[in-house]
Length: 404
Image 1 (tube, one colour):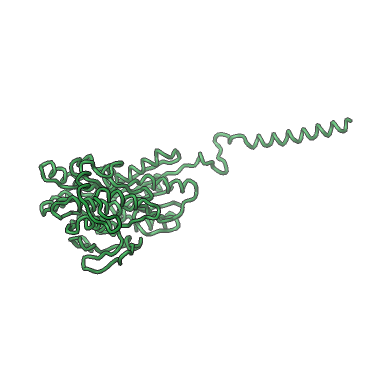
Image 2: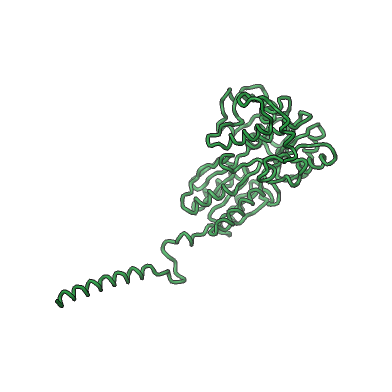
């Protein structure tokens, strides 16, 4: 009998000892000590952003900074820093600062001209992550990303072609990069579809941010009879020109660039192209946080939600111009007779669809010299669009090889 009780007591002792060891192992780490493996809650990431323009430019840089603020407010484990107005070619010096002084884990460089410096920095700091916006060089620790807007430029072109009274549509362009050329062509394709008689006239600035030059170029185009303007320049200068002329009784239709600008030209801004960089930064940083980051090339368009139509978010077309667009009709080979407003809404939905039911760069498309670049029914590939160096046939102007 005692023997049986002793065995019972022994078993109870073993069980209690085991439970004691389990509870001891589950105790929180003593303050001041570091666990072997940090928990998800303890992990922190610091991201640095290098901007080519000032954050108050209301264009490209402003849109990136809105995205930075979005992810910083969304993720409690994220801290961000930025440097603005960095000259292309000088980015490596600022990468050094962000890595060595700010202790950043990842650096985003947000201009095409930062590409070579970013690639060198990725080699220099192999234990850090780099993301370059609009470039094509990748490495083990260097990815690329871009919110591509050509679909929205095409939709703006439809509006410009429908609204112009002079058949002269203008484009104030920053640099002759493939990105800008692609956008001019998409805009011109939309213009031609809505109005085969209209031409697109181009003025080059050789600057991403130069309000004075942009204003001068816009005024020059208006003087030559242009009454619709799109642009790639990171200020509201072109919008200002359009609004000033419109208020004086000369209606100039303007299509704004990257950031919401309708408030600066309520009587001139018809629409524009908007970017939500925030959702792209969210995707990249979440992957870094969960150790699933890779060096993929992000190429997000309408269907991913990165690119939107409008001069303000949630306002695809300024209500002031909707009736005028509804009054202009064309015959589409598939849709039949349709007004421009309905065509824009239809095309926008088609481009958002998972398989992208419509693409502006679908042949037949000829260049300025009459050379057939895309055969009937042929869609441009990513590589063609990424390296495009020719204008479509209704563009007036040349693609310069250099500023001189």
